[in-house]
Amino acid sequence: MRKIVQVKKKFLFISRWGEALDIANATLQEGNEVKLYVEDKASKEIGYGFVKKVQDWKKHVDWADVLIFDYTGNGAICQELRAQGKLVFGGTEYTDALELDRNFGQEELKRHKINILPFKEFETFKEAIKYVEANPNAYVIKPSGETQELKQLLFVGNDDSGQDVVRVLKAYEKSWGDDFGTFQLQRKVKGVEISVSAFFNGVEFLTPINITFEHKKLFPKELGVSTGEMGSSMFWVKDSPIFDKTLKKMEAILAKNNFFGHIDLNCIVNGHGIYPLEFTSRFGFPQIFIQRAGITEPIGELLYKVASGHKFQLQVKKGFQVGAFVVVPPFPYEDKKTFELFSKDAVVILKKDSLEGIHPMHLKIVNDQWLITGNTGIALLVTGTGLTMKDAQKMMYNRINTVIINNCYYRTDIGDRWFEDSDKLWSWGLL
Image: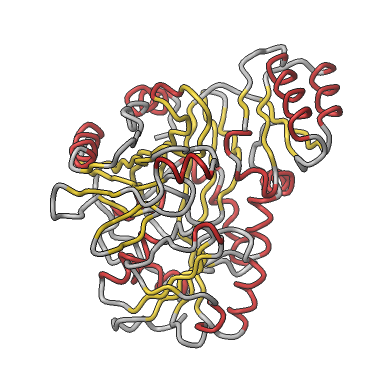
């Protein structure tokens, strides 16, 4: 294990779509040197004016004390860099497969004696339609590989006969043809959706454990299209029965594969059991930004210590943290014309000088002014913290009211689920 020296360090953030801006900027504000690379062409402007941008991250590897990869798919590169003696916060080929290959992820859970829901993988819609008609039930359609990034394609069926799933599959067949790629049909169960996550230092999970409740639909009360995320509520705990029965059982295999990073396991839980749904073997978005609101030590130092294999306990706030995305058109869809008409270079006005709880997302700075860039329409993530969920919500929405963005929208009920979900979790003995 490397000795941690309390000196300012050089961080190189390698980002897929510019999602790392907030933590890169926070790391810079802590006094470190920071460089940010953004891979996606349409997202190249993200971060300009906040941190130093680079066009080819590989030319800066020798400069960096630690490299931070913010997305899945770079596992082989991370392993190669570690073999060269570099400190890397990121995945491995094994953890990439856990997230990107849903079938592999479910089989690994099963191999480690973790309960899973029945599922079946398909390559064509015709096969899937035939399967549902022969095995009527409620199912969830889950794209695999790169297609799973299009969150609006995930469909949660409500019909116990599966006819709603059949109709959606037929619609996908007409619009996608054979270009959809592989996908899963997973048996749907009712319960509380909850995720457990932790940082991993190459040997073991670090405590406390993070418990997150995601809000994925565009509108309040879980209405509208799936967006991937509109916001989350969370808290930190030393012990979790859900963690012990799921992610904790993966500790040895993660150590064997030399993983240094963050991993999350999303689950459905009810009175009958705990059923893992999917891995996120990287930072969760917006999870990491809301986590940062609850972490009381410098985020750069934390990332450095994880990448160094250091054993330590995270310093976090008591109580709850909540966060909501503030977005503009065409979110959650991709529509270049709409984005350029309504949102490109739109001004983000902050009524107060304090940036506490205001996390820049797809922004740039021009003439000291925050402007929206990229192509997604994600402007800010705003967080709040408190000893109670209501306190945290109040702080977050008060902060949102200090921001002016033309045509913006956000969920007004982030955290509300907790009041009913917590009663269920307590009664099932899972808190």
